[in-house]
Length: 460
Image (tube, rainbow, N blue to C red; front, side, top):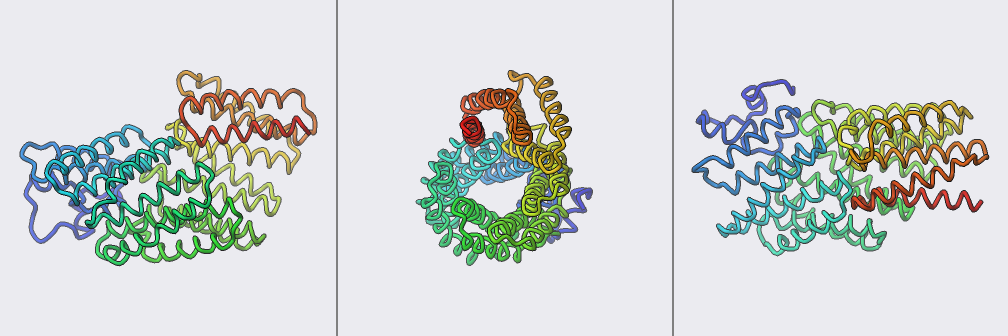
């Protein structure tokens, strides 16, 4: 599907219209004709070309509705950034959205101003998700505070996005009550989006699905902190509702993201209930989420799905004490690593590396095979030697943090501390300082938790 040329893709999807577009109009509109739902069907090469074409269209002399063209370009660059984790694409999208908002404001197009500010907020939230910069949430909140005063068609989207930002900021501050209030605040705008726009076009349907996914993610995060089974069930029910409105053949990426959330909810429920059948269902759901994905279509979605499958296999391994599950999890994390290692600042890379180290440690614990830890330690030390800290401080600190986790595992297995706990503490302290200096709050918290574990181990 993804190898069709533009004309064949448009004919297949029925977006060519009644008559032929003029050469200028076709160039302006690109392959999608302004329909953002069709972006999901483009592979990465076509998507990047679409983003460049949108830039050209917005910058053409005599361009009509330049603010609209700028906003369309921002949306396409945002999709490029979401699939690749490319900070440059994210910056391009943010610049185009800001220019669209400024121009629309000068032209007194209030609805368009609101739409552009919502896009600015979405880009900021994506940056926070990809790179762990919590300051971007505050920026998104400030932008949305201006957008929410609008009474146009984008007011509901602005309210939903503001609830998502508030929820994420509350979780980062460990304020679960405020996060739950934010999840509740989603209900009114989601009802408006579903009632007024949800069934009208593909772009609005995907927008609704994305906001539902944000609420589900927030509910699951609160459920994990509270060990609340009812919250997990609510999240699972909303996953089913959202998935029922999507078709994996035409909305593969959004469908896959929601299916991964369903897998996460099933795994949480199985873990809370001690039900292996639910965890097995979660593994099956995570596997199904991988089916419509391809690393050439959306590298980061594919890597995220592999990582999610690995985490679900970890849960199965903990429930069954099966080293085979942990071995399969390591395989999944290795596949994800091949993608995320090219973008070292991604928080996903840190999570993948941390979970891979944990799976290797559990394999060694279950099999009492220290050779597994030896091989893992050598791999991390080689990575540290190949990547000096000055070139990639975040990636170097991630490797330090995970090397420390393997030191901890050896002490736990052997029951003897040959100085590895001190080495682990040093590595974690260095990682903590680097993450704090870079403003990577989530990674700083992970390093702090590791230092706390070392302190407790030394006290014991």
